[in-house]
Length: 179
Image (cartoon, rainbow, N blue to C red; front, side, top):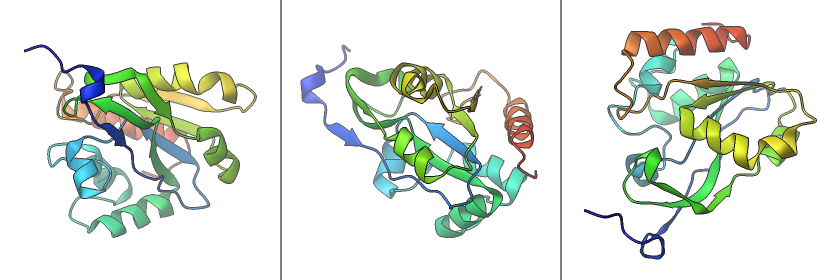
């Protein structure tokens, strides 16, 4: 079945950033999927591994209510946001994001308000590629460590969960997060 024309897709608005003032790491996704937008919670799809990994690494696991998970992430120095502020997409897959009318979030403003953030971790290839295209040129003067990590999405089934977790652990440790 062919994809619907861009004009027939709704313009999806992302979620606001979640960050404590002392954040040192910003995890950037692309744009929340349908389950996350409906719940107004990052990584709300029950098969997404993000919260399971954060439980293993910093004690912010899915067994906690969402506000407590966010508090624990903040206490560990981890912030959450997305590269895209809004975009058109059929379904929840990153590959379906239409770049022609996608708009980026104000990462420059976020980083100005959170000067302790020195590391950007991209949750998957789409987030890393979109950041490089939309944001990297305007942030060239700011020294940032950027690292693309394997997506925690259930759509990324090519890598075993244990290998993904190891990559996330290493990236957080390199950024000075106690895991």
